[in-house]
Length: 304
Image (tube, rainbow, N blue to C red; front, side, top):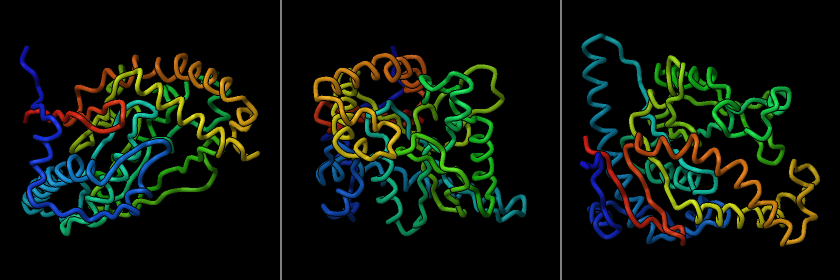
């Protein structure tokens, strides 16, 4: 079977960095890494610097194409380059997105890079409860897809300002009347579980608006372990806050918390991964394969 991807091991991919400088310090990197994840400066040098160089080349080529089109039609509208980042819960999508944002914003040709998570397009908790979807949160049907598609269309149309609802992980809900405002950035990174999904019966998809897409991949058993570890950390930190939606889990013993986390993983997140997230992997332009230690061991780049 002929593969649609060119595969690189870590050493092969690292060579593609060329002379791209490392613009992050250890302290800056720590501020970008999520709970219980481990990302070193070596990882940034070997994996993310070559990736930022590749995307910088793609952005330059796309900007040249847009300039040619704008000249032809007589419209100088500025259109952001849009990157999608997909993958399972607890696989490290947010960390990947934040590191990319930090690196890409340091290239002189596109200094303004915004990061948007699709959590803001989840349906409000009250509506999810009314539709009996609380245990399907994160599944495609739990999102306001129409609003998300309109957001993507407005961004790609070069609208001066586009608003994104803000989601609170503490409250486990949309924050009323609070928004992230996107003001014509050079690049927009859109991170979420289902951003590469096509689904059935829709006239448009989020991925239709992507110029480049990344899928963060790992073995199911490893992701489950990371999910459990993160749950245990949250139990000792965020869940202790009485305002937390999951405050009831703060009183669990360690063994009870592990069992609860595994049950949540197996009955909700693993189901979503297998049914909705994993089937979109081959649609990505690039796949980052992580090992048990969180380090990326293989990169797959789709052939043009």
